[in-house]
Amino acid sequence: MRRMRWTVYLWPGLPQIARGGGWAALVVAVGAAVLLNAALVTTWIWPDWIARELRIISWALLAVTWVAAAGVSARSDRRRKARSAQPDDDGFREALLEYLKGNWFGTEQVLARLLHRDRDDPEARLMLATLLRRTRRLDEATRELNFLARLDRAESWAWETRREGELLRQARQPAADADDAEPIERQVEQQIEQQVEQQAGA
Image: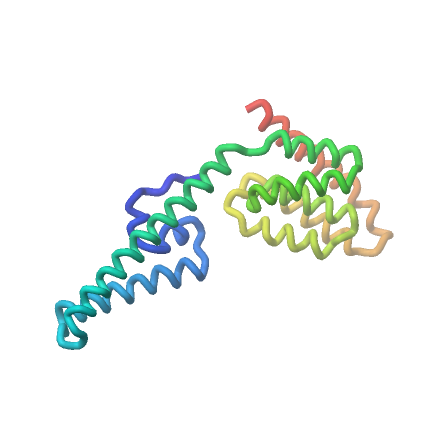
């Protein structure tokens, strides 16, 4: 995961925006800007708008909120780093082994465990999409691929994701065209196996 400068944590919501954003983080960042500007205006430009005691209270609340937001962002970032520093490689290999044996239920159980630990795990998401397609749960497989396409961490799996998308489209076609998908499907499985072997040897 990319390391962020400590100065990013000085503005509420900015660390989340730097990691890919989200409406909640944007609302927090804009809200912090509004509160700070309001405090500055009522203190130095139009001090007669509110009483002196209220100005002191507003600055104190703003400072507490600011420090709390920075602390929450820093703690959340540490947790993300800890999860990425301890990947469950054994769990992924176990899922791959169950998949290659045709044990769909066992594979899904292992993948569910991996995704509970890290919902943005691209390898587990891709394998789950493949499993869902093989078990004819095509709408669920489509949702997994759409989720995968939005992950920055899935860039190294872009080829496999595109091929899985092609197989999913073919799976929605009539049965007469289904036989054409088998060679491509085997290529995807071989690519996944190679990726796992490379990660194990790294």
